[in-house]
Length: 488
Ligand code: SF4
Image (cartoon, rainbow, N blue to C red):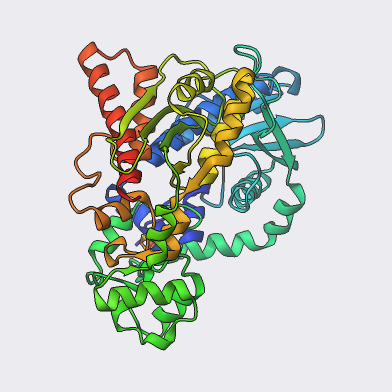
């Protein structure tokens, strides 16, 4: 009886390198995969950059057959390769197969006596997993008889600034990775043989761990966790930046943080977390109140919402630049005064920071601390605004000097077991002010905010939907500054 022999692909091999069980599930129980909104957004952005890269590389012949039509795609590729090089010098999505491994190549450039393979990635450089992607493809192409001599990653040029509408010349950078790819070739046949055995064998017994999110988030995590004994309420994995310490605890058989002996931790922050978790009592250092009380009035509580695009959408911006499209600011003039709220949500669909900056200086006066959560981000946005609003430059840079970051204060002087190892505003807030939380908001996190904002820009929403989304975004951003008020 012939054994079932599914084909491998570049993606399946990469899945198998991450985890044999992931590969097995991908082949046999694909429907169990759950792709989050963030993955879908990244995929859509990657596809858009891939299409733009084809134009930036000077165009070529696209193999139209999709990934479900492998034979047709390979036949179409062979027809194009049968033409003289001058009539098909560059092929996109060329399809090849070798030893039952199928690949589609982003760009195959036919040089006079050899081929160049280009793998396009919507990142700002070549990463280790990209080199593996290209190495697997190179192995298949050489095995199928193509003379691949040069291998490159086509990625975003991080220094590119979008200056003329529709002109992306210079956005694509090519990095040569031929040597790294060649160095991986000798190990690929063994890897392929090993992974073929995995897919033909029984489902691998692998438990979840750090490998489930490295280098990529695994879409089977929900399924795998549902098959494992329930996690303790406070697993040792909640220790932030646990790395090797957590691995060691797990290896020693500890799963519940409350069961780890006190003297087992050498990191003071881990000690504090473990003690609060064991006793069920929050750690509150009086230094926290003292530091906040010492701040002068008036006080400003500021939060920006920002978005980034791999392919710059607005003139004057770079790939992946964080660009603020909204702010919320509560102003309190004295301990007894009622805070006033200001905010702005910009949906004009051009670089919004000059307009956001203009509205910001209308509500932030010349003196008084500006309280934020995670200063680096707000400082970066204010500096960017100073660059696009020269008239307000001095005031905006002055604000950078007045930023007071509550995050390190809380990190050093406060911990509640319900934070479960996180000092995000969303984790800390309900432990300080029970009842005040983000649960139930239509826009409840940064990703929701970005998706809602993109919908406002891209979609022709009816007026009720547009107003609903605007209100949800405004409410979400204001909740962040209400939280800052409540924590100070
Ligand atoms: S969730 Fe983890 S253990 Fe399960 S398949 Fe994915 S990587 Fe493997």
